[in-house]
Amino acid sequence: ITLEVTANGYASERVLKLQLVEENISSDDSDSDGDGIPNSKDINTESNKIQAGTGKTITSLENTRILLGVMGKDSGRLTFGQMKGYMEDNHMADITKDTSSTGDIYDYVIESLNATGISAKVIIELATPLPKDAELRKYSLVTNSWSGFVVNANNVIASKKSATCTDNVVWQTMLIQGATCLKLTIKDGGVNDTDGDQSNTGQANGVIESTIAIATPVTNNDSTSANSNSGGCVYNPNAPARFDIGFVLLMMLSTYYFIRRKRRFIR
Image 1 (cartoon, helix red, strand yellow):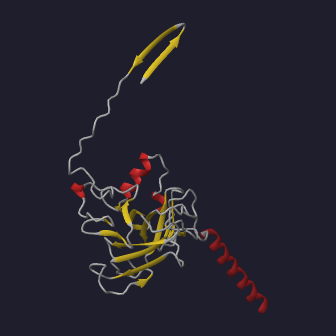
Image 2: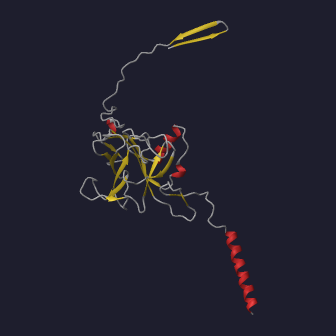
Image 3: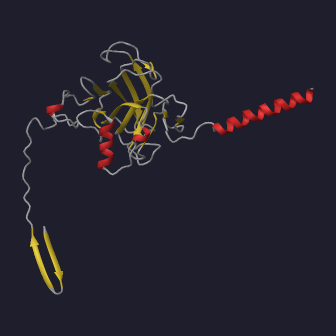
C-alpha cells in the first residue's frame, strides 16, 4: 500500500507491505457443518438442524439446509437483548416499543431448496409451550418492524403437543394452546420470506430468511390494537382515553336536567 502526500511543491511517500498468512483455527473454533455455530458450542452436526436453546432444535425438512439468522449467536433462539444489541450495533431504530406482547423469538435461514419460488418446511421445538390465544408474528430487517405471519395455500402454520416433534401425534392447523412443536411452511419469495428489499415480499432465490415470534395479545382498557398487519395487540401507554371523563359527566347532567323538565311539563 503506497501513500503519497504532495503539498507546496514537496512530496512524501510511505509504503506499507502486508503479508497474507494462513489463519490458524483450532478444531474447537471451527464450524464443521457451516451453520454459524462453532463446534465447541454445537450439539448438532447435521446440516438440516441448528440448536434453539437448551436441548431444543430447529429442523429444516425436504433435504434443505438451515443456518443461524443474521441476529443469531450460537442458537436460533433469540432474546430481546440480542435483538436490541444487533439494532444498536447497526445503528437501527429501537423496536422494543413494538415487542411488548412478544414471547419466544427464533431467527434462522433455510437454503438449498430444490427450485426457486417453492415452499420449504421447518419444525421448531419450542422452548415454551404456546400460551392461550397465541399469535405468530414475523420480523423484517428491511422495514425494522413486526407484522402478522400470513397464512395461505403456500404459507401454513401447524402445531402439536409432543415430546419429540417427530412422533405420530397429528399436527393441527394453526396454533393450539400448550403445543410444544411448531411446523411452518414458508414460500421462497413470498410474504413471509424477509430477504427482499420490500416489506411485502421476499426474493425468489432459493433462500428463505425467517425471524418469527410467539405473541400474546394484551388485554387492557388503555391498549390499542396494532394495525391490520401487526399480528397482535401492543400496549401503548400514550394512547388517548376512549372517553373523556368530563364529557361523560356533562352528558349525565344534561340527561338529568331534561328528565326534570319533562316531569314539570307532564304535571
